[in-house]
Length: 143
Image (cartoon, rainbow, N blue to C red; front, side, top):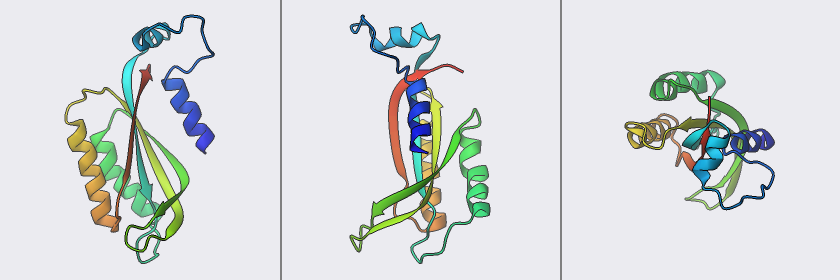
């Protein structure tokens, strides 16, 4: 799974074999592929409640349909993963199934921070989660 995520990120970030012109600005690297600068957002969701009960596929699909897709209707990808994290209270390392929602968008997309904050807060509230991971990278995009 991680290889798929890395390959997809590499494609969008215009990863290419080393070129002789390493001084070209990043925007020129994007233009070379007919792409434009953008950001890649990864949201990391654990699928186990604090009491050990799993978040079911039906619950996940319902959350995705009502909380994520309407806020990013232009498209996103969902990856199944296996996550691990340290519990803030017990300091114990825990492993659990997880989902990664991957979104490619414009850095100045309207209300981007508000939309991401709402998704993360809703998931934490609905499924009693301590956190929802957020990773943002810059890259090139062409669709």
